[in-house]
Length: 255
Image (tube, rainbow, N blue to C red):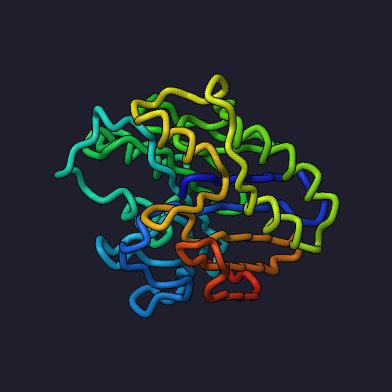
């Protein structure tokens, strides 16, 4: 993912609300969200190149999402796939904090990332760049290709929009709408992450339109207080037009 917005224990009827965009090269083979044949409890899209995923949910309420940390000067081509971290947590039964603590020692093997994991009781974040593991308090959070809640323009704008969209629940249209925000920002407001300013400007949008690299899918995840889960993934074509859409509704079960 390149933008993940979360409302954790911030709504009386929806303890977890997630709105997220996955940005990727359009030519990278991808399977749309579905329950996995080799891990039937896991609902997620799948990267068909490395086999992992960027965001997923299980029938027992385990959740995970990952963003890359943008630092091209430290990128290593031979590093292991970060998407396997998401599927690794989803297929585990260990609680979030111990699982992240077990990962922390091996975090340096990977290119920079931020990983969000939860089990319905705890939601936690780990970055192998900062080395910190944080258990999240109730609230609204935003994550892009920097650390959690870094005040990038698109993160700040999307967090504000998410706060308003929560008032419209259970209607989820405003959540998908805020993920379609394709405005870019003035150069003086942009971070300096080591890429060319033209690329930095393009990447400043929450929704990226580009024939080579852009927003491939938008996902809205709603977990109700009664355990009903709504998982909605909208795929996008290179020109930004709508592609396929996958919708799932199920009730959480005991692990």
